[in-house]
Amino acid sequence: MEWTRQQRYRPLNEVSSTELAELQSTVNQCEWRQTFHIQPNTGLLNDPNGFSYFNGEYHLFYQWFPLGAVHGLKYWYHLKSKDLVYWDDLGVGLTPDSDFDSHGAYSGSAIEHQGKLYLLYTGNTRDDNWVRHPYQCVAIMDDDYQITKLDKPVISSIPEGYTDHFRDPKVWKQDDQYYAVIGAQRVNQTGCIVLYNSTNLLDWTFIGEIETEMDSFGFMWECPDYFELENQGVVIFSPQGLAASGDQYQNIYQSGYVIGEKLDMQQNKLRHGDFHELDRGFDFYAPQTTVDPSGRRILVGWMGLPEIAYPTDSNGWAHCLTLPRELSIQNGKLLQQPVKELEALRQQAHTVKDTIVNATKVYEGFTGTTYEMICEINSIDAQTVGIEFRTSEQEKTMIYYDAIGKKVVLDRTNSGQEVGVDYGTIRQCAIDANNITFQLFVDVSSVEIFINDGIEVFTSRIFPSQNSDGIRFFASAGSAEFQMSKWDY
Image (cartoon, rainbow, N blue to C red; front, side, top):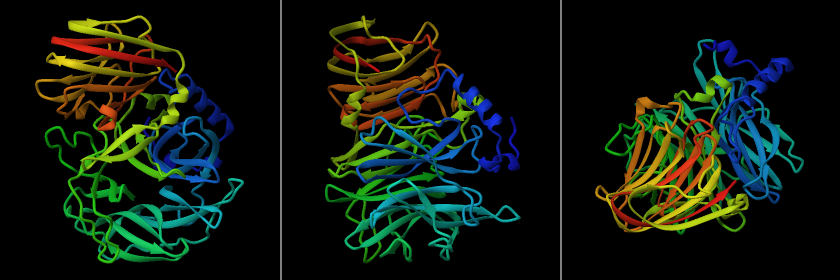
């Protein structure tokens, strides 16, 4: 279906209940609906927004176009949770119905202030010539989850030197000041981040562009996020326009981070190390973090990418969010580990220990389409060791360690319905280790794989047949000791 501009920007209140019911029926018939990931009831989900902890609950919004698997008039959809595992559906959080967000309530963040939750977001507008005019807007949520938008933007203009690609404010508090980073594009078509501050979240002052060592690093930096962790400064952002280089930057757009000294507020300068990709898989973008009362820094990402067609599109929906991940720093890199609360999903357990020599093996209880599995592989004296999952005679997804090349490889060449094949079907990264641990979270149409306690993560959508539910373990050209634990979900 070719969508016209008018169809993409039709408000939800102009859509009949019959049309919505028909769309919901189409979505419900899809064989790739997830079971334990956040996904849209209908339509397209993208960036996580407003991730925060407020009044004893986590709040999480996401970008949402309700009418199909395309990018159109964006709403914020609202969820809340006490445990990061089970989420309550609160429906639409922000509706694009003002002069300042008429063409979409775009991405932003949230923070508690004076007993209420303040949402700072980009209002997207277009003029008669379809030229974009972004505004940074505020909405305020009370204890009863009622959200009221302010009647005018809090940042109404773009500073000189930047284009209309100016969006995605991420707010935090430091001492008695509020700060916000915003993703921007310079007039020379390069990406950067700018900084604002405020004492009340309503009156904002432009401090300037944050000085980094990445003056020409893609054409736009989306969804910036600054925070301090273990006495260091961390910037997460999603640069667009990086050229593939070896195993790096293989997706259409990337998400990653730099770690360094804390942001120098006086000079507006960040001294940092190298840029690292956050995720080595096929489908990960626009992550956002929050901090909980115990001080954990928790990240959620969009399990999808812009400008890529997905097999669920024809069923009227697209994309989901990743599982929440706790962040820490080790040897100058961010570690991502699934939050402990996810263990509540575990049901029946299956365990096995075996030495595999030049063989592929299957074990009783090791099948399924939704589960968590931890596989520890030690005493590796083989060229490759790994796992094939969601397998049948025709289909399989592979995660394995190449001990010769010292790389972890994810291969979805035979994973089922194709997705994003223009960008390849293999992702890999270098890991030099004597032992490998794979922790897999397998859902109906996705997998998240944490390597060696989160030193690397591979997040990917996969679209196998429902009967592809096998799991196989292998060691090639040698032997290795395997210890596996699997929990049904």
